[in-house]
Amino acid sequence: MKKFSYDLTIEAATEAEADSKMSAIGTLLKKLTTKEFLKLADIVKNDPVKTALAKKALGV
Image (cartoon, rainbow, N blue to C red; front, side, top):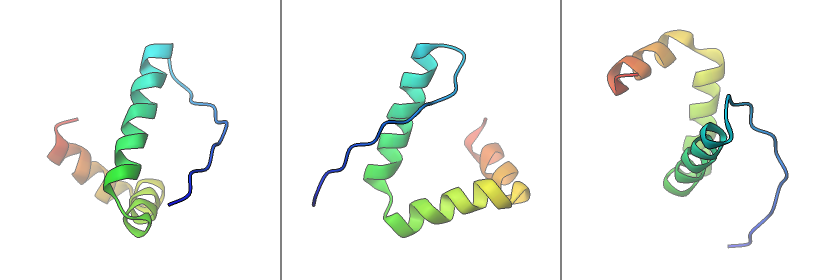
């Protein structure tokens, strides 16, 4: 598979928090298919009820 590089900005209170967010994004990208990742983003963006249920299930 080809690799592509991007410059992006992450909003966070500290650099350590931004690093943690980037690490989490990397894990999601590795473990989810493109279809799954896009569906997750769509739900987080457009379905607050499902997002709240997921956060509750995750304990956050």
